[in-house]
Image (cartoon, rainbow, N blue to C red; front, side, top):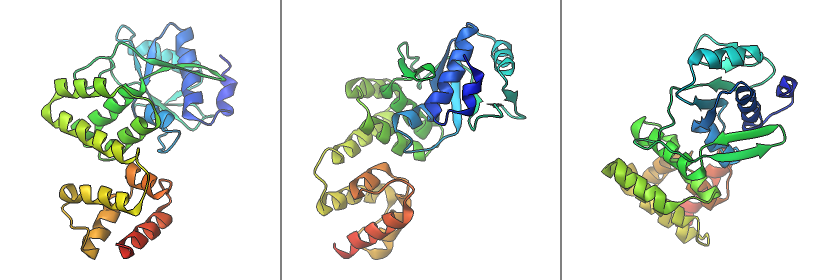
Amino acid sequence: MNIELLKEVKTPEETASIVYEILKAKGIEVVLTGGSCMEIYTHSNYSSYDLDFIANPSIKTEQVKNAMIEAGFEKTKDRYFKHPDNDYYVEFPTGPVSLGNEEPKEHSELKTHVGTLKLLTPTNCVKDRLCAYLYHNGEECFSQAIAVAHKNEIDKENLSKWAFKECLEMQETVNELLRNLEYLDKTVTNELIKSYLKSKEEKHKVDISIESDFLLLTDDLIDDYVIHELLGVELGEDAIYYEKMEQLYKER
């Protein structure tokens, strides 16, 4: 693997591929997980400059550290490795790969122009985001899970069976995710958008017929993938988002 390529690559999948190939050459088996998987599967709808690799439990931490330092990465004061020629931070959380109570046995393989990469499947990436949402209070991760599920083919039956084995709250969360996905399969109209907003009233404790409550919900959904897709607004284009939501209220 030509380490010089780290100067040229810009995307998470390219950087991750180089790291994967570096470690593979040393006999170190790793899998990409976490927010970086989500970023790859959503085509950068969300940005994360962390690459989370989990090594096979048989691999010692010192092996990983030596391989990374030999490749020119520097160990930061915290838990990351950073190469001076690349923007991404690489982390190696303790394994094994786990999605709640499940340890997945199958992973996806992605080929890039700089190498290959082993990562969570789209379905397992959704599970990972839902675990982050439910078990680690990552509020933004629910919207990320929807984005991955919408932009990729996932196994909904497998997802539901997994949630059943996890807990009642996860079952409810997966059911909510599947209901939200249904809005993205329909022809977009103002009535459909209002129906989606109406479905959020109970959770956000608002009444969208009241202007102040509508504005509160508008703020709450600033990072919501579904409403942005329905409005045709890219995440991060806040001015356009607020303008369209205001217009929607006026047309109620």
